Every structure is written in structure tokens, then in C-alpha cells.
Amino acid sequence: MTNQVVIQMVKELKHASSKNDAPIWAKLAEFALKPSSARRVVNLTRISKITKDGDAVVVPGKILGTGNISHKITISSFSISNSAAKKIIEAGGKVSTFGEMIEKYPSGKGVKIIG
Image 1 (cartoon, rainbow, N blue to C red):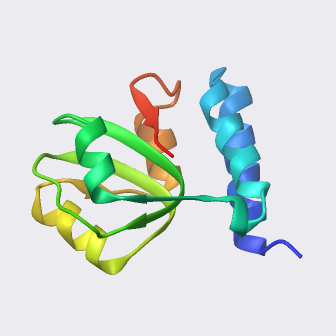
Image 2: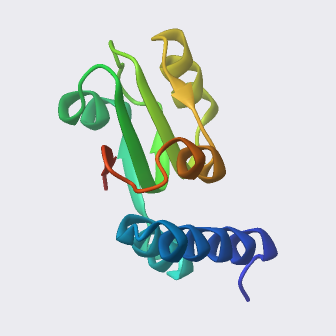
């Protein structure tokens, strides 16, 4: 059975996709409906290598705190470890909800999917 929070998030993502003609949000809705065992796990080392200062990033899975990040990013994910969130905030970045990401980047332009 799917969690009610996930169902609500999927509805929000699909609505944002159709309203703003942004396929990125529909793609994230598809990822959210997959079983948790199929979701991606990404650590900060990988995120740090792929991103640069000021990037907006979405991870359709879990972010782990292995490694460090040395630049500011805005990030959103289905799940994030406490150590990863702490390291991102200490680097000057921001951990956002999907709703905040949709509000800031309605068309999805400039948002990277990692995982």
C-alpha cells in the first residue's frame, strides 16, 4: 500500500507538470510511485562532483551524508539523512520540499535530477 503522503506529493507533482508544461515534475511523480527498493541512493560525494555553486537539484531517492559538499546548492529528495542535511546547510545550501522547488522553478528549467 502506498503512503498517503506519497500520494499527495504525486498529485502535487502531476498538477505542477500539467499547469506549467514541465515534464520534469511528471517524471518525479513516476519515480515516487516506484517501490522503495527501486529508489536511488546518492551520497554527498557524488552530488558534489556533479553539481556546481548555485545549482538546483532533485534526487528521486535518498541522500546519504557520506562525503562533503563545498558549494551552495538547493536540493530536494524523497528522503535525506540528518548528516547530509546538516552538511548541505553548513555549506550554505538549502534543503527544500518539492512544493518549494515547484514554486521557485515552476517550469523545471535549471533543475537537475541526480540518481
